[in-house]
Length: 227
Image (tube, rainbow, N blue to C red; front, side):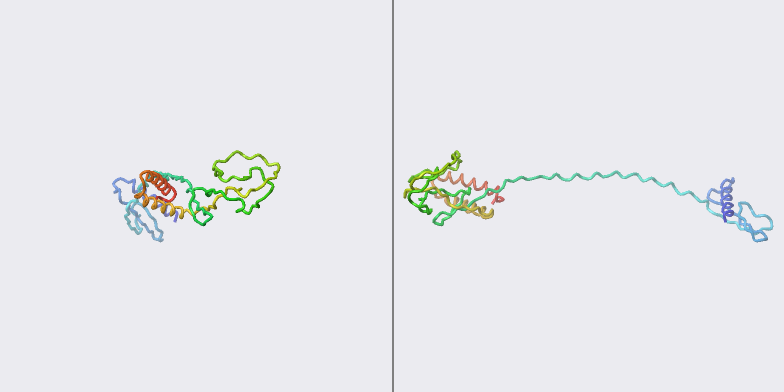
């Protein structure tokens, strides 16, 4: 078979090179002798051999393969910028309870101060050892200031004294923080109360009510999503 393949290739090359041959045709002669031996050639068979003529179309090379142009890489779109929104923590509101059970709101955890006699706090009335800074007796003392005062000197002992029946001390109402939803509801209620009161208020009081309402509106916008 290898010998036959080389003969076919030689015939094809010879026919292509022969003058007068058509560019698209290839003629092959199949020659069979008396012993049945098959020979392929590009010229007519010898006398006494059986001859078969085959015409073939000259094979063509495949067209050159087109080189695909590289597709430019598409730059990824930059991620959208992320914004960080800073918000102040909601301001707390406290509910305070007076001794009579009535309630009020305060912006601080310090309830309203009040002067009470010491005997109402189960202090014994009579001679006792007084610590430095105790009130001996003052019927109308000033309320404690919110500003911190100078530190007290260290106490190295006590001294003998008396607790007079009129002696007393300052105490503050108990206050507890309200949930934020309740804070917003209380602010809205207070604003409605101001608006109802505004129509019957004196001009001087109206200025005060306007100032308070502006403060409530600003607080609702900051802490409650703008009620």
